[in-house]
Length: 102
Picture (cartoon, rainbow, N blue to C red):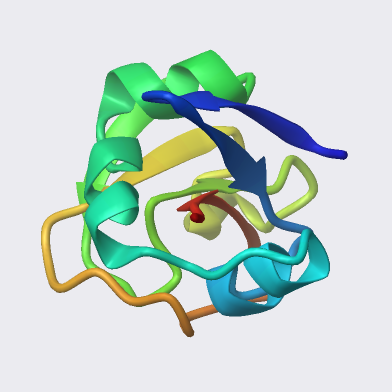
């Protein structure tokens, strides 16, 4: 199981291009947008990923880490804190999400 603790429940790290809904389902759990909000901090992202830095961004695929082999313009190695609406269904080929499931 690819999980670390987020509050009292484990957080799930997605595969690249995988949504939180799919990652949580893979663990027989359900994505919880309230728990996504707990994951949406630089501190939580850095605890679960090897980020070089945190950037504030907008995207349905966030909170997330940009994969290491992403093109330079995509900011490889960065953790992305979402300043917009959080979504369980967002995914992107160049990011790995941190998800809150219940």
